[in-house]
Length: 147
Image: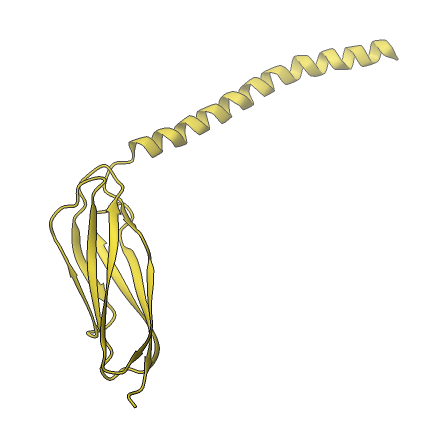
């Protein structure tokens, strides 16, 4: 019985060593491949400090504004092409100058609540040359009727 167990142990060791070596080699190659892709990904990356801003309660007819700050965390200049809103009540203002890697930029968003009522969410879509294009932020406001 002891001889049979020793034979099985030797056979297992003999057959498993190549399997373990191949498995570890495959795993290491996979990890290195992902790291290489992460390091060599070229282009600008648009990263916002916040993706949503809530104004809270405002009175119908009021105008409010907020500045969305962002950073180019990529390795190439970032160019904002266009900033789109869901209606004319939301107006964005932004620079078309390039944002260099590691530098910050901002988008000013003005919201006019004239003719609006209740809780609203307005989506702002940012079109750029970023690798994560398009980007989106939003504002949320609760409009109370005039008294």
